[in-house]
Amino acid sequence: MNTLVQNEGVIRLAVFAGIFLAMAALEVVMEERPLTVPRAARWRRHGGLLLVNSLLVRLLFPAGAVGAAVYAERHGLGILRVVELPPWMLAAGAFVLLDFLLWLQHVVFHAVPRLFALHQVHHADRDFDASLGIRFHPLEMILSMVLKAAMVLLIGAPAPVVVLFEIVLSATSIFNHANVRLPGPLDCVLRVFVVTPAMHRVHHSEAPADMNTNFDFNLPWWDHLCGTYRGAAAAPIVAGMPQYPQETTQSLLWMIALPFRSGPVRAYEPARAENARLPMIEAAAGPS
Image 1 (cartoon, rainbow, N blue to C red):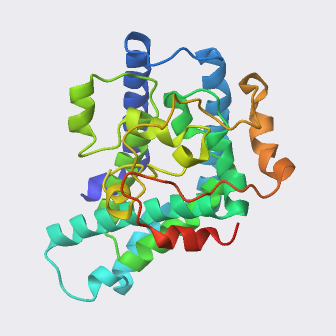
Image 2: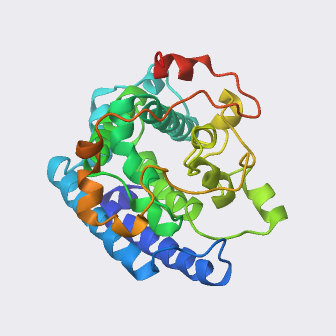
């Protein structure tokens, strides 16, 4: 496990590159829908955004969430350290709690207009492919890192678990944004354990009632438990946001400037999901 922590950057990069290339290959042979912008152009602009984000996060948080985990362990911080747990239980509990808190963060970023102004960069894309898994505004990435470090300290997550969580999250983000059509039976089995492209594609619909469902990134259970799961879109999915119709104009500079040009954006309306029973999200959204 120490090797995992010491080589975090190399391992994460290798896993990301492997998953990205695998999904890109599958997009060629199992394409769900044609792209409106050539793949090469999308990779350039989204790759540029990834580079900006990576440099900023490494500059501002050189130790990242792993540093927070090391600090928590040295000082005995975190709710999972209140009682002595077996190592496997501590690891499993930390992983699951991190995933839930990340799901909750995603919900809040949809519910609060000033936060969705940042997150809309991810949703404004009129296409849907593996590169969308790295399309996030730099300020959202910085804020997310602060929140993730706070989550790690709150939970008391061990450093190896944090590294493993980051690796899995990176891989699943690429996988569930892939422009692939999985066979129906395979999709049904996989979505019991992980968020599939068909499941997450609903979340990228321009219809708010669909956009505000299926918030899961990694584990697919929280939407089921909290009433925001939707098995299929109410209508054929049109990706993106209707106020940004021309994906061809969405350059790197356009994406970085978008939150400052648009101001706060109201994205949330209580979704009529298949088992909707989540008043806490409505409370977070505030009055209409």
